[in-house]
Length: 194
Image (cartoon, rainbow, N blue to C red; front, side, top):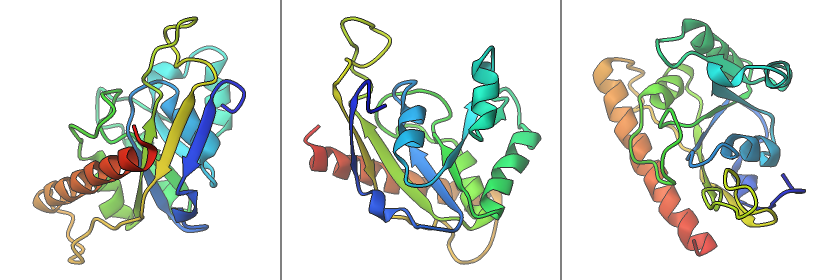
């Protein structure tokens, strides 16, 4: 990442040194995941769509601990692997919109809140800004040597301390998560001037 772009990382000190943790990032471009993996102070295990596990990328993604997920159904194997990462005190990376979208957290799915409620792991919001710009040489990538900001926010818990994992608790947690992620994105934009 440092060879192709100029990542600027803000707030990495907010990531707890140990214990289960969920990184929740916006997903505007394919390089957002690798950018977070490359700049996080702790190893991150992302849920990655099964379509990415092809050719030479397949053994590479598995070797660096990424989790294959079938997005067409409730993939129980992927869910079990993700919960296992958290049970062992690791860092799970999630793009809560489920797919590439705009630079904002516009439409969250319930998966992020589910993992947070089920595991009790705190969430650290992270904004990747600047990756959606198209380069002139390779339009599928941001301009080479351009600055990409990675801004980590304050960790927060989503549970309401009741310990409930009902559908209504999940829906309420999803709304709380969306509010926190949206506020973090606004703060990241102010901090970076983007």
